[in-house]
Length: 486
Ligand code: NAD
Image 1: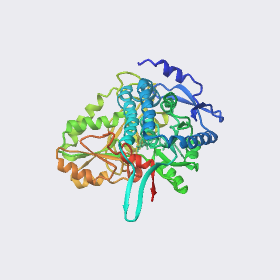
Image 2 (image 1 turned 45 degrees about the horizontal axis):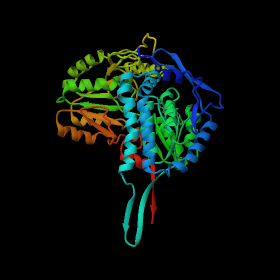
Image 3 (image 1 turned 90 degrees about the horizontal axis):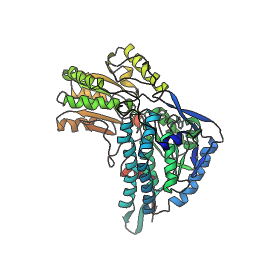
Image 4 (image 1 turned 180 degrees about the horizontal axis):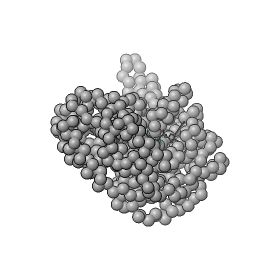
């Protein structure tokens, strides 16, 4: 078991950890705190203050006041400060990784290797982009000396889910801050720790007071206030499709842009000419990564009939080797799921799926007797009408169907309203490109699943989001608006 660093111990010893508002740590006047649990052993890690409406309003007012200063910093000044923030995140990378492993339950080596460094890279990517690119456009229209500039919105409200608290927060605030906006962040109720730790680093980096505000608390209080407040000029939400639709409606009523990154039920088409070992390895990894709690991961495996048996045997063998242990254990490859609620929901889905006729190929339909909220990798096989094929389970569970023709495989992938990410596995580059174009989603990956890089836009369509995406130059457009001067 990894030892907690002294900084992590000190951070967790606060009772409760307050909100970060206007550069200060503020105990909520609400005077309510919620216990944050370690899903690996059900112990309380610490308590976190629950923000009130008044706290959120303070945060929004602080962000609004800070905007007047921050927007007028030159791109160079903003980039310098944000890069200093990134340096400090790198210095405290182990602290951030430990908080992710403790709070979410994820394997610490995944947090060290992906969540933390990839999140930090986002701050650097967008800080460099605002230096390199000129966003001013001369409009050559006869008789008019016109141009369009892009300017920040003002206060941007961010609402995040619990599965990648740090990475998703960086994906959001990186471009928004670089573009000159100020931010009010609401982390998920159950995983606020790494986000709150960023407050310490923001303070030390000299990010001006009010530019970053972090208010943990309930969706119905903190989240609703952020989305409906008139001084919040743009809302960025990452989370479930149902809450996303509600937020979209709320923002629509107030005519403010809502950037929605929502749920998914990714399909993977495995053709009979695929490298089956490679596909089995890649897809086993897709459901064990973050214990399957990944919005874009492949959870519907659509396999060509004549290679289905071979594929199933190989993927089973891969999954059986997974080292399932507390995320803080060095050797852990897959930790527990995030909460009792999530564990119950996953088991409930598996039981319903079996009741509807699915065959259980690997895993269990019973709660595991263990000190944490563990669910083993689980494979089900059956028809497309099964609940486990149709609904997002958000756990280490994949549902396998078979197909005979390319048309049928594409039809199966596109049979749901989700459209976040799919993949195609084949040795034929022509077939891969053809199928990639036909699968309805924001991302079609080829012979891989979960492919991320800065410069590669990532986002969903239909029930998975409104398309803007993250991680590319277009993201800066989502956090700025055009101003025409003529
Ligand atoms: P959720 O929708 O239940 O909650 C997300 C956030 O919204 C939380 O902070 C919650 O407190 C807040 N919230 C809840 N009700 C609200 C309201 N009425 N107003 C404002 N805020 C409110 O999602 P979750 O269970 O935390 O996360 C899992 C979901 O997130 C999955 O569906 C997953 O696919 C999705 N997700 C999507 C992406 C993506 O990039 N597309 C990334 C990660 C997770």
